[in-house]
Image (cartoon, rainbow, N blue to C red; front, top):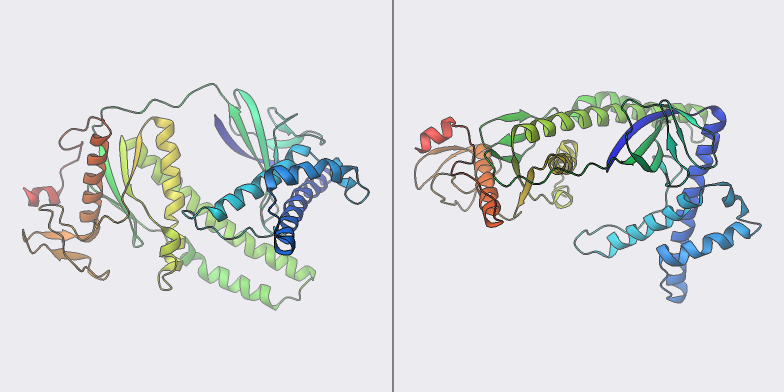
Length: 388
């Protein structure tokens, strides 16, 4: 399977249809959520969004009140029920600790899923009940088109995510690993590698803060429901979109570099939701977006047949000396370098943590039966020389 996201350019009539399609999907989601919640609160009846709500769709289309739903793709409406069911599953899963499903709003990102009567050409895409839409297909689509997911960004841009069965399987996982790198996530430096390399954090949100503050203040002054407020909201959305695009581009390039240069990447298991409760660092942690970075590493590694190893989240990588294994009891965040009381070596907090992360990853790989040389392809650094 291969997915490609492209920009589409609907005409005014097509844009009107797509907006109504998004509205129908949003209506089904919100109505299903309302029915399930009210039935449980009033009568204690537990309904399932995936089964009970989907059965109501054909009945609703035959009624006078909701007959307009038949003008839109039935698969897209059914997918709304499936997505609501996933939201409930996430809510009841104690490991995810997700919040109760919320009603979808008209403002914000809108999506609709289509898996029947879809097609892609050189400069167009086709979805059910709509004429071909002009598109900028920037790369060849080879294989059978399985589905097309349309989306509309808060800035009013339309996109299509095309899922294609290209018949090409992912590369098999490498059995002998000559290059393993440990990566410690940080705020000052977004990624610290066990070989001594440090990638500075671009701090996209901080750089855009002044511009965002000015436009958000202008938005707050506008009267609700006015055309001026709509324009001001669009300006704020575009500023956020530029920031998100810059962060996304940076993470794609960095993750591609790490996967290309190494056969295995070892990272910590981060509980970002818990870390965001820190009032002083939550803004910087959210801007760093470690979770999305690890997600990009994951699918790139899978496609290339390489390994992404996540170690235990409770492992004290910063407090443990990478030379002798001694662990100190307390190591405040403001201490960036420290001396090991056992072997007296001077340690850089972040590089030391990355080396420990890498070593834990190697142990995990060997336990799973993979062949990793003694040094794991580690390039010699000043830290290794001092340890020797």
